[in-house]
Image (cartoon, one colour):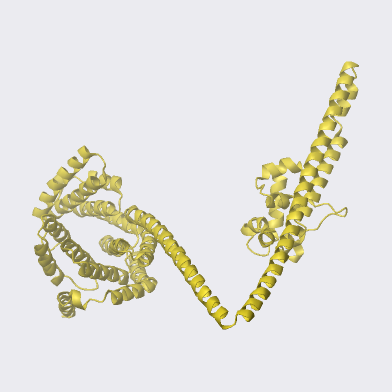
Length: 547
């Protein structure tokens, strides 16, 4: 009695809907509220699943296990793809364990259809190949033909080869004909296929009347109601009634969300229509929810559908942003012209009222602006001079080092030639293996680097210590030179991130450099993974302020 009453209420709601009394903003608000409560609806589905899983764990009866696994498959079917497949596979194993080959084949055909709906075509083909069609009963033959019909339809849709498309379409028609003679007219697959046939042949009004009868026989607040609402949307879409089609696809989405369904097809359609209408913000919000649902469901089909729409939305967002920016610039230009015009009128009025006072004020204002400009110019000159001085110093350091090393190399060449000429090989070998000379060169290079870097970033040590805990502070050495840890992060600040390059410059092993970096990052105040990025930002704000 209660179910009949609910169906009657749903019928009255469906037939009382007209374009005049549809408030889509109200429906979108209902949808937004459903999305906000989606976690609560999913929790209700999860609770049902937990009850059945506890019962399954407790029972030892194989037939009862089969029924519970099938019920769990139905609950997981629109929720989590992998779990639904697992329980349907378990049904196959339990049916075969009891010797019920027909039920095992029924489950294989249903699993194949489920794979097809989720985009797993190879898996579906394998399931169908495992079925001995010569032993199928009427229900098994129906399920098998439904799966074959769906598989060839999908393959025909996605293939890019015309010859293969014709081949799959021919097979689809073959299995459609066989399927429609076997499947019950009260079955959703029959109703879906028949309504699609009516729309394909241009019989849209007849398709809508058929959908009316379908809706009369469907209980509200069920997954079937979401399906019939979606097909009602398709009928109105074919009629070109945009208001009603948007209403019914929204009802389909709301119904599925309230049932904790994550295999969302309707919301993808809704987001696509909103995008075509230019409602990008709402379309993006709904397609983002659809993407989250697709990730939970875990099947590739929905991800294939969502990805292009996300990309298209991103492109349209960019285009809309650019267009908005152009309008903003045009508005600013118009406003600037208007402001100039108003200022001119104001100046003229002031001139007519009191020419002397206006002149005095303008002169005072001009002097003040001139002084301010002179001050800014003087400050800019000082900064420019300082910048040039720093550049000259670094160029001088570079040329000095180059000259020093050229002279050293020249001396080494002359000394080497002299030793070779006098056959003083032992002395030559001693010079070549003189580690003290190498250490002096390295020390001189580090000293020059430290001096140059501290000159460029005088507060670097204080800034990096501000990023570290008090017990992990870094300090310069007694002679004023930078420690190895500070040098490593000084190189990172200059853009040298590769540990092998840092190791080569500082004459350490790569592992040693890695250990230094890890030790310092371990003392970071916040997230240690962001520490080096923060080091790279040291001094940037100061530079921007100077510029």
